[in-house]
Image 1 (cartoon, one colour):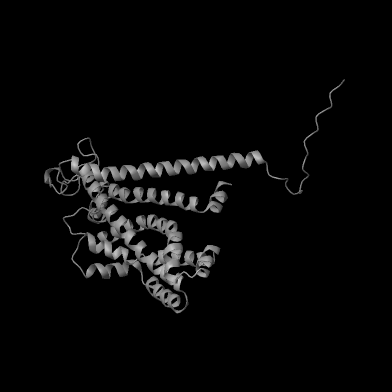
Image 2 (cartoon, helix red, strand yellow; image 1 turned 180 degrees about the vertical axis):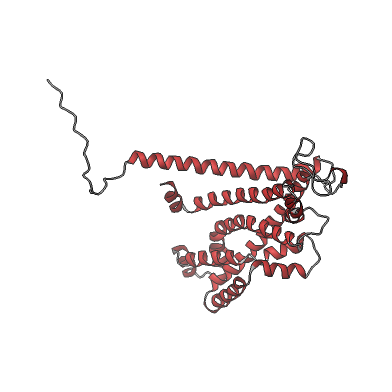
Length: 308
């Protein structure tokens, strides 16, 4: 018995609308994007781990003075003895970059925590109380948002002596606005949930509802805001140090290193500027990559859209 001939593939006429998408093609594309996202997250985690390990391990193990001056070896190109070269007074650029990164990460993490605590408290207060309190708080937020962060930070730093903690206060007290808005929006969303209505119907006070139900519900978003704040705080500290308003001159800072190497760059010596700049950009991009992965995990709908 002769076999039935295979049905020929449908030929789409010119101008006809395209047929349904091929499921295999979409599945392959989704798998490829998931692999790229996984590689990005792992790379970001490796870079952050390496940066943290360097700032914790290198200073105690390497018993070298990052302020040691060697005029006879100034502006030496990168070599085996000085992997990142030396600056205009003979100081090792790699060692100073590690010390500067330690200060930048300290300022970034502490300032992000300060901004998150302040923003979470103010946003939760506005969202939980509502009414006139909410409107007054949001007008205050608008006032802070209307002033440039760098200008307000310069004003705060100028009130104190140069040091780490004035910079932390400057960054933390100027970057809480975005966290406040996120937390307020999340609290307003939680206020309409059935469990909150049940707690209110059971006689719970506003304070108890806020502490037991609203604040725990916004902690994941607040934590994400804190992680996203770290790169911004590091860049803000570097900008202040670049302007000469951050840390004292004797303390290594990545922004101050870039500012001090401008003359060397014009003379053709690129390494005192390039490597501190990379120490600012690469770790902060890695932290931002981890924060992006966390945001996708908190928002499954967004993750599914990115997978397609």
